[in-house]
Length: 80
Image (cartoon, one colour):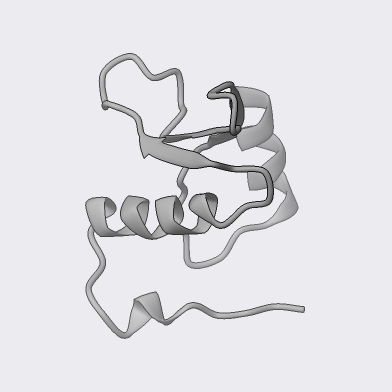
């Protein structure tokens, strides 16, 4: 199923989009807490999610794109 998020209707800057992604990460199963990483050397990680024993178990790289094909996803996966 495909869902179109309403980002084309409202101006969304990078900070807002990262905050939106953070709220999604916080709702993932087994995630006790999540935080935005600082922009300096983060190696592509924008959000890190932690388990109840404070171990990092989720890494998120935020990408705000209108359309994404398989080739872009493969490249991002290789780069990440």
